[in-house]
Length: 119
Image (cartoon, rainbow, N blue to C red; front, side, top):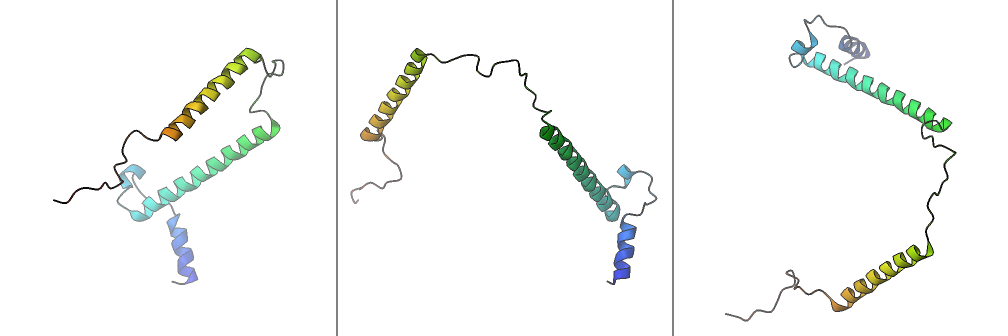
């Protein structure tokens, strides 16, 4: 296929066909189907690029994630009693985990073959 034929084929790909309606034509003409798919793909890519640029601009200006500056960052402080309870809770969990590691599993592993007497 020469360069001239390629240019003509590319030009004919995007040429407007004389069809009654796009929905009635879809599935009958492969060239028209590919034209619809290509234009839809290009349109969706352009929309996604536009939305990405818009969101990037908003984030870069700092306008998208606005927080009221009048509110304090930390409203509730953690008391010493609650902190000691939390540490004690996790220490108990660590002790139970260590006990489970020492004891081993109470069940038999089905994948380990057992010795069976001959028949």
